[in-house]
Amino acid sequence: MFDYNKLFATFFYSGCSKKAPGTAGSIAALPFVFLVNYLILKLHDFNGFKEINDFFHLLGVHFILCGILFAAGSCSADKYAKDVGKDDPKEVVIDEVVGMWLTLIICAPGAIAIVDQIHSAILLVFIFLLFRMFDAIKPWPISWLDRNIKGGIGIMVDDIAAAFFASLMFYSVWFAFADYWKA
Image (tube, rainbow, N blue to C red; front, side, top):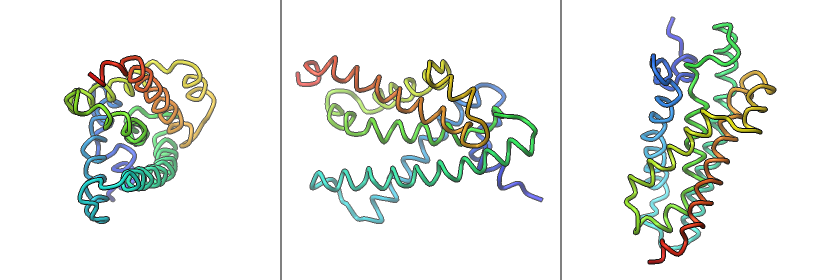
């Protein structure tokens, strides 16, 4: 019988990569996030951001969908971990997908403000690397969350914290170079 839970928990088997499954899951998140963004725009027929409310509406929809994926990912990760008998199987990368998505959502306003000055691909790589750095290094309190919260939520929550830390670092750099962005 086909294991749909494994398909979801490993995010279409991207987590089954022999090397750096977390990075593979984070990379796999990017086309997913862009596809979701495209579909939201098509469904709502925004045709660009004519008003600031359109942009914040788009962000709100992303936050809601990301929250739904967090809840589904927590259940899926918990079931998969129990099925394989491990607390936090490396192949489970739905947490990286949610964390990467959340990082992109939070960084979007700042990224849009400077996209004319910096090529968007470079900015995307920077945001990606920030998330991966905090997810891999796990400074406190991320490390505390990783060690002390168990089950599916425990698998997911350290990546949510990594997303917030990556976003905080992004905005710290953004504000540090605010005069440069204006030039």
